[in-house]
Image (cartoon, rainbow, N blue to C red):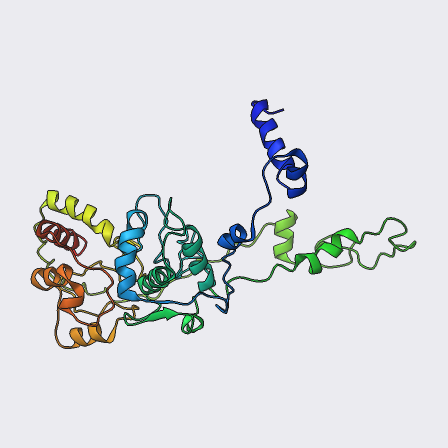
Length: 361
């Protein structure tokens, strides 16, 4: 019995009057009009065949996303507080704590478009134009490194985008493959009348088995002591020559307060970049040891041609180069894939430089 009988009664009445027939009979409510139904009939097929007219490019999407979405999802789709992250999480689905985003988990782009169009922005659903929705989805794809920065999403280009987890879902066919096995039960005369014993289990050392027990089996059964192998002797070897240790590198002097502030600023980067023990490449490369590293050189990460060429040309990350890059990544290395717009405050740049220095010790 519910602790709140009045709520239970209200729920029951709502259920009973939900059908048009009962609503008409009881004089409560009215059937929805065709226009009202059409306003919510926004399903998008996985092949995009019933998409609306319109289009949107990545950079327009960045502006629209900043206006409508960034308050909850962050400027770079990295999520704010407990609001969902929309980017990152590549190759984490098998982890104990997977990050499920558009780029790592969602199987169809139509689901992304449909959800944004139907339910966003929060508290003001369906207030955006179809062009705005196209642009936002294009920016989300770019934030997941799935399209280039010149990509334009439209009904014509929609099918060109295949999300990484498109093959990660299967059709639920249990009704055809499993249910019959549970419902088609034998209720009588299910086993043959005669039961035949075909094999007997024989234990080693059993006096009734007619077999000889080996010394090991005797030891296991407790009928004979187990043999103790003789200790192996190792050949004498010459004493190893101790290598001369390199003198340890002189540690960098850090400003603890600035490092702490930099850790907070780094929250803007965490959706794409990881640091610390066990860090792995994500949308962006691991930043452990970034101080003094050649640009585009972290093992296992696929850099843009622009970044790789810059490293090949001698670009190394230090206070000057990192500051210039973080201030405006796209201007500093035009054509690189960094979606971050840059840090506008000199104090934030100084803080994050100190923090990156701390993870490079």
